[in-house]
Length: 70
Image (cartoon, rainbow, N blue to C red; front, side, top):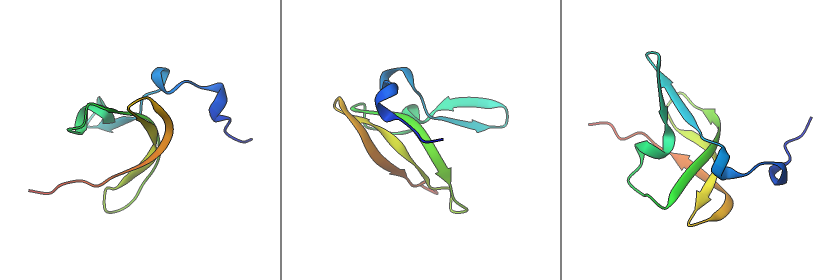
């Protein structure tokens, strides 16, 4: 089974982070309001998340989130 990106609208999809039973949209964890993070595909041991989203209404662009450690 493949993924047909044309069958979905990024405006209706949201990538989420589940941590300690709390669900947070990934888009709320970044400082750029022009990004909407629609789908997350993978999380590695370093905490990086890869997926697709839209930036300034351009659909299906890849993203890589890297955690900032204080």
